[in-house]
Image 1 (spheres, helix red, strand yellow):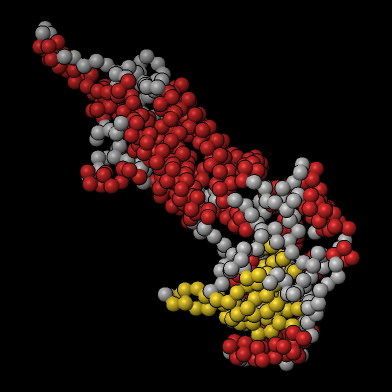
Image 2 (image 1 turned 90 degrees about the vertical axis):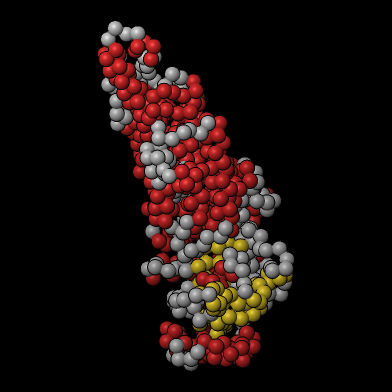
Length: 592
């Protein structure tokens, strides 16, 4: 029985409102322990075909069969059954080779203990020839070494179907030769099927069969040494120029006619049992995985692995670590240095007390009414300036924390999307992934908001409750962080995510209705979406209710304020909406 079989598989996409076929009625079979190359000119549908087999893309027609079962009707391939190696490296640059492989084990295999985990990782590292560089960080590896690492990370679950997409692309001839030989040896282990997509026609003699695609059509699948005869060329390198001489549908029809005779020459017999052919270290891997019971780790275990890995990456990424420290300590200092009028009080540092206004009776009964009226005007001016100072101080903190929130998460998901998609295909729970991001970013928000509130309050003696101030600052930060995280989960590039997040922060001040009074219609529409308004209004509303600064704030602000409780509720709703959209974003496939 063939282990993998495609029957009349087609895949179409829309372009300009019309459907066009990327794959057209592709049919072929692959037996156990087979090493196959999918070759063809650029843009012929090789990667699309591989993604259909992997289950990343859903076929528009036809069916994919695995061990006799139709994957469209029965269960999809189990994550442990298939390994998918994309063209470019999908490992974190700040981790070492050993850490990358161990992380893959932790996310895919339920190990008994740390020793069991290391045993599996060591076997796979040895199997792919990475033992001499296991302590090197990914960012210093050569192209060939990164491809080996990608293979190692897929082998931790010992998949029976290994799909490789252009893993030799861009490599020098020696590295390409080494990778193809490695893939050939992996196909002889445990009856594993290895399918390698490549545009290179080198090392074809190592493959059990080659499949030639032309404009989405299968036009040959047979032994490599029979391809020259089929295409009537003297050299294999002449196959590609020959393809252009006929329409792809003509080639396809010709192949259907001649396919039986070429398939008769393929060896589709059952290979020897793995006990007779598998190297000793492979058998050890089988034993180790058998001990793991074949179950994926639970969501909480995956969450712990992801969170620990995220902090390791932050600790080693000196540029990001320096930026976070600069924002954490620098932004509160900016609030103190650039808040006008903060140090103009004769009584020393901090916001001066609000002077009491003279009553009309005191002015009338005064012996010098003109002086009292002038004094009353001066007091009113002081009250206005203090109101402006407090309002500006509250808004300055809010805007800077909004900027911190944008920096926290604008690139958090989109920058590692290829890695996430790869791990999700291998069984990573999207909920575990989201929870790890929420936990990591929540700790950042707590540190940033607590330091901003505490540092600024120490120097300004900001009126009102420090706890209430911290709650609002944290919610503003969390609101912007989660909204930008949602943007990151939906964006196609880091540039797009960063630009949208910058625009979002840029509109906070002018649309907050705190500096310029907006038309009522505009304010009604925009205010519900502006986190800065709710953080600013909530602070001032609390200060007005609990302190004597209400007179100055009423004179300074251009509009009325929403109650503190409403502000907290709206910002909490922002956070909930951001998390919901992020959850939907990480569930969607976003393959390159």
